Length: 360
View 1: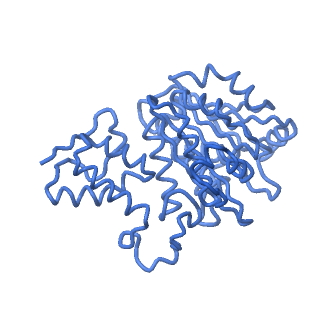
View 2: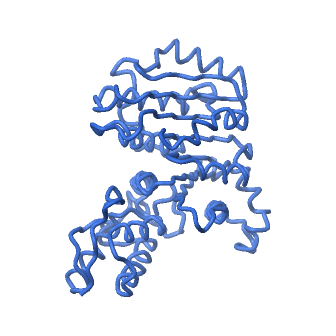
View 3: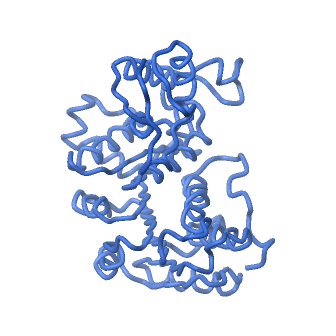
């Protein structure tokens, strides 16, 4: 692939799709492992388990093309550890015809990227998980898993529990509108929502269902994003990571594309706020989700629940917001003399050596 053959910016402000969200995260994910002089891992694996033919019926580029575009973008940027890390991309699909189309497309359009190994095969999801268990379970390799199920319930409870156990692994899986419809009939969902007919909130309930599958003694971070198609159908994306930096990167992408709630490409809370129709800047007119978070954060500070910045960062993550959303509260409470600290915004990169908070 030549330098000018790919889109430098995957999302141009048009209709936001799941592929835009996914591609923006891939764009943020790759430099984490390749931009430091001392690479944290010697191998980087990207698995696309339902890769498809590389484009849809309207010739819109699919996830394999977008992955290769972002790898080419990283190569062109000259990331310092590019040549120090082995990079393997696995494009799988149970449909042999789709895989053959994908191979042809990559060859014909010269989409291969220098120094990136391609593993393209027709293999079903569960067989691929079993075959690559040694890689997925290896704590010395970085992995990203993309599971676009296309209406198939590939991520069962057992599969989800397996995904969250893989070390150094971020994963994204998509829930089709059909899958979300079936969640309406699930007993655990019906208990939370007596009449779960509102598609605006069914994805939240499904997200909470998966979150409840995580053992209480396991540190796993999940984040949701809902997409409303032009047809009116709603489907969801669930992101998972064992590392706070992984989920924070996802939240930054989500909030960049939804300044109202950070979780959808539509007005999920019926606040009737559109970003291009704001009477006031978002810094002045605070949406409900942000204002609720700020009040909860103030109360937590006043109860002295935080000892250092990572405590605050995790509070932000659990609230579904970025660390930047804590800035105003931290500034105000420092001015009021509630506590002292040497940061305005908690930084998840300091997870091993977080800066302390001293209460006055």
